[in-house]
Image: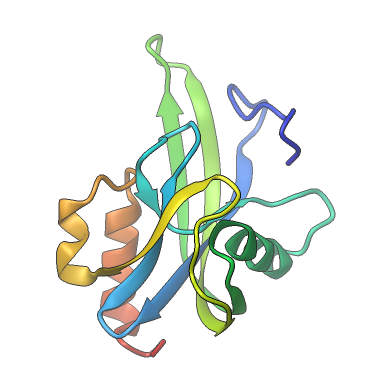
Length: 150
């Protein structure tokens, strides 16, 4: 989506993609640099653009946010994030497809709307300010796929 697009109070859910990049007992996370959820840690990813294939969207988003080129694998999770305003109206509504990805080139560095990029050990995840629901997604993926990405 272009910077002028407003995702607040969407007429329908916004389709997004996320990257689960796992190496051993670590996962690559980005710290969000913009609202919503500025300063929270999350999976690299973002909104799918009209006419863009899902796997192309996740590869683009990972490159923009981390500087990494990835091989996009299978969908590991489908996740819905809905954030309501003070009146209870859905202010943001996303349907997110999270893909297992493997790094093929590059060195992690923040870019686009990410403030930081870090490898985080599984045991350290609960210590971070993580976007709602993301920790549970990561834990399910670790349980299902373990260290298969390394």
